[in-house]
Amino acid sequence: MQFFILMFIIFGILILVFPVKIDGIQKKVFRTFRLISEVKANTALTPGNIIAIRIIGLIFISLSIFAFFSMHLQIGKINRGLKPVGADTALHQTVTRIVQPMADDHVGLVVCTIADDKHDITGFGRINLKAEQSPDGDTIFEIGSITKAFTGILLANMIAQNNLALNTTVLSLLPSRLNEPDAQKKSVTLQHLVTHTSGLKRMPANLLSLPKIWASIRAGDYYRGTTEEDVYDTILKKKLRHNPGEYFAYSNAGFGLLGLILSEQSGDNYHNLVKTVITDNLGLENTGVQLNKKQLSGLATGYRSFFRIGPFYLAQRSEYWNFPDCMAAAGGIRSTAKDMQVFLAANMGKTSSSLVPIMKQSHAVLFKDDDVQIGMGWFHDQLPDSGKTIITHGGETGGFTGFLGFTEDGRFGVVILSNSTNQVDEIGYMILEALVKEY
Image (cartoon, rainbow, N blue to C red):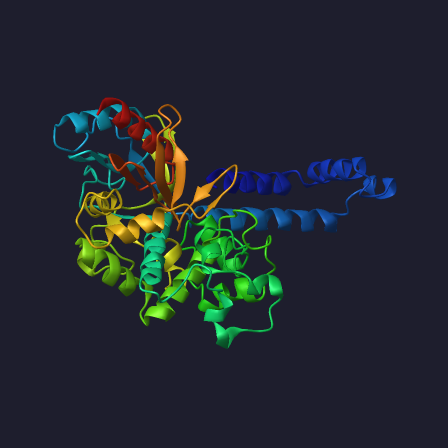
């Protein structure tokens, strides 16, 4: 994004300094594609035209500079010289061997692993570019769309209690908002929402609003201002991308809608529903959508993008994404590596929690085609070398990425939490392959 802003600044300077040449180039291009007549292409600029073009150049420069200095840019040292933080075990050494060569591609990340009865948490890099402190098991991260795995478990729990069924239609649960939708929308079910096969748009109805575009430029809180009406309008007023159940097409709006339904059925908001069903059950003390002041002080700083300049980073600091309740089920949870390791172990069947059978049910494949296999939010894939089946979910917000994955047999698992938006899925796959091979 910084690159494009700089290009706009350069373009504005060129318009300001060389208005006649820029106009000539533009006319040649337009004439080449027959967008203007030959007469117009050969018409000379008047003094008034030149002034107008220069004013446009000044506007380009002013707006671009304003945008550039609103991007929360920071400079910090690369991670070289910082040793990984963790207990010196064989599992820690395996993780370090794989991750350390790629650590400089991230501001900071923490990796928790499970191999049979062995556990490890190892931190790399920095919690922010101003600190020498590496993230550890207590550092809090935004986990983004890994939240959808929690949402899938909540749905599985409600189904187990006979409060809902996968084939329950969405609009039957929203009777007060029924506005004579077409038959296609009436057939959208909870299964379609949880498997991304509903046909709903990827984002809520206000995706292209000016505040959203501005938030994207400055790495702001993207979902700020999103309302329940925006989410409901995604199904009531927007055309579906395809017939329900026909194709897989990822939809954050669909999971936002699912979260609203779960909240309405339980009589509580999404955060409290997660707490009651999952985090209290598993003893996850620092996991949720809403955090207290002490927890918020432990949040790592997120970075959307950064460049290596010699021994330094130039990075764009991201605002935290404070998901409103209407979209929390799509990506609003924050957590720590310690908590996520417990959550991972439970999904692998390594705890005695009463929630484990519900989790297993949420993993079961509900939709598959040549490209994807998915359960209640959980994706199924194969490791490229060993061919082992794994169950996964990734996550990303404005300044964080994450990956959770475990082998279907429950032997090996990994969670990676990063405070920058460089993807970590590949690292997750590499670690799982190494665990399968070495343990």
